[in-house]
Amino acid sequence: MSSISHQSIEQRLETYHTGLTNARDVPELQSRLAVFGYTPDRLNQLLALYQEVFDLYLAQKNEFSEQLAATHAFQEAWHMAHNDYIRLIKLGRIILKNDYAAYVKLTLNQERKKSFSGWLTQARTFFNSLLADSGVLAQYNRYGTDQDAIQAAFALVQAAEQANTAKVKETGEAQQATQERDARLDVLDSKMSKFYSLARLACEDAPQLLEMLGITVKGD
Image (cartoon, rainbow, N blue to C red; front, top):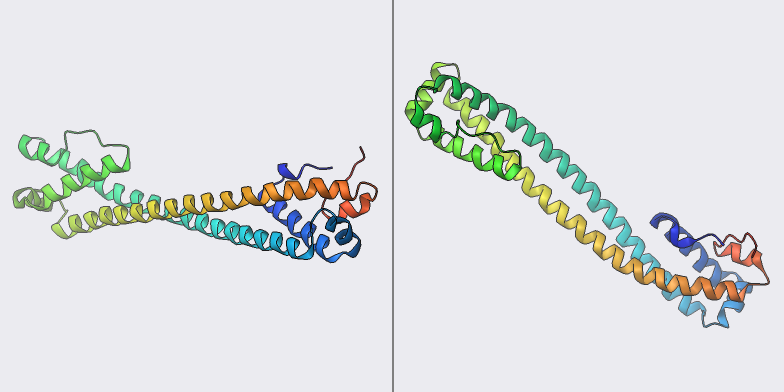
């Protein structure tokens, strides 16, 4: 008998559905399994559990797809924001190199953080300090970067922050959906393991019936 437990979730669910449906609807299977308590009503209960798990499986796949989309959107938003932000950092380091107070206030003396949280903190400090200092704004404007351009770059940073918030939300929902699916799948797996063990006993003299349950018999 092939090991159903080693099949993928998709394969297991398909095998379970086929096995339970045939166990209920094929008369010879139904009569053999009824001896072990698998009446049509009990088989319908197992099919209802299967349907619950299948619905959770579909929900998890949907949540995971939304997580992937949110992660991609965040990475794109961060990349766009970072490019404009770093250009302003590089320009500031050139035009403000002799203004130590402004240089430090805008965090131009710091290495850029690699984590998003660290990057975001530095970016907020940079833009808030820059936009609050008319003298430094005038310096940037003198070198082809006016306040509107700086505000637009800051808006990209804020968009990246919003995209990160959405990504975190979708990640949490995907994790929750996975936990819910796995918890109910464990219950179904346990019940189906017992079902298949008893079915093998019930049909040990009729391997062709086991095939109808999704059990491949290669010989003992």
